[in-house]
Amino acid sequence: MTIIGYARVSSEDQDCSIQEEALRAAGCTIIRSEKHTGTTTDGRGELEIVLSFMRSGDTLMVTRIDRLARSVADLERIVGTLRQKNAHLRATEQPIDTSTPAGIAFLQMLGVFAQFETAIRRERQMEGIAKAKAAGVYKGRKPTVPVDAIRQLVADGVGPSEIAKRLGVARASVYRAIST
Image (cartoon, rainbow, N blue to C red; front, side, top):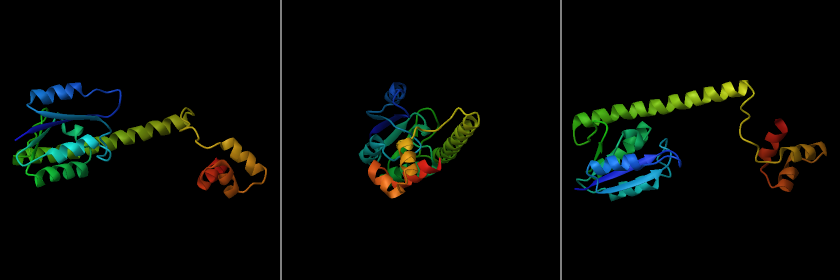
């Protein structure tokens, strides 16, 4: 029976060392870490490696459940994978232990709250962007196509398909540049 630790931070300027230290103190003999968003499990190679390591009787240890998943669907998938392998999930900072009914119930509640928190954060971000746009501060991402060149070619009477071909851009990008 092995205790395998998993640590995750969301961005490159963050550090996993505090989580790794807590996982070591909790008895983890193997710790895998990564810097990747928690809003999805897609592209989280270290998590996939950890899940592939798990054997019957092993425990996956995290510091908090939001380090593992931020959606109920992802959390259920991970716990389902562990259940199939007869392995368990525990957290150092939360009373989660999927080897007990109370631990499973608490895990499910935390999963719902993590998903809710992500939705609220996204809503606040969209409100902030709308406010910045209204104030004329937020202009969005800089165009990746030569808008001025497209407009000049349109003014010269060149059609969208030919413009796309000449500039090596998608025709949809030409239409977007024309409409703005």
